Structure formats: C-alpha cells, structure tokens
Length: 113
Image (cartoon, rainbow, N blue to C red; front, top):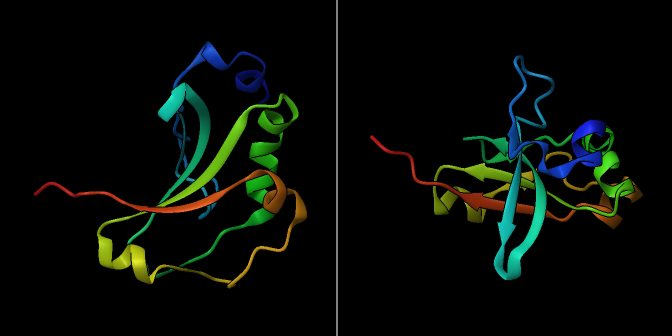
C-alpha cells in the first residue's frame, strides 16, 4: 500500500491473492463526482451483519491518509433491502483514526444471473 500511496497512478485496483482478513476484499481507486479521486477499501458481503476490523483497515489506509489522499470503506451488499438493514458487528467502530479519516459507506450491487 505504501508504494501505491506514494505513486497513485501506479494502478487502479488491488485484489489480494489470498484472503487477508474478513474486512477487505479489494482496494479500488475510484473517481467521484467533481473528479474527486478516492481509494476505496471494499468488502463484498451477503450478510446482514458485518465485521470490520478497524485496526486492519487503518493499517491498510494509513499510507494513503499520510499522503493526504482521500480514502473510504465500502461494504457492498447484493440488494437494496440488505443495504437498508445492514449493521456492523460490533455495532460501532471506536478507533479514532478510522473515525477521523475513513468514511464508512454501504452500497448495493446488482448480481447478474
């Protein structure tokens, strides 16, 4: 992550070869409205409750935050109903660095048959 944070144009996404943790499935560099670039730590899940290891998330995100790059965490769920009912377990993240620097989002994606 440190080399990518140092040179953001190096790549657009990263998917670990093996599962690192139940918190992150991939990291993607996304462009938001207004050409705002953000490095998004993604977790794909079908579960209604989800675990987020704040220490692990911070370890991955910190190199980007240190370079003043925008980051976020997105839990991707398969439908709108799961998005509305989604909850983190434990219910709250208390790690100050995550709360101060990493917005947490829940989004849904359409699964093709």
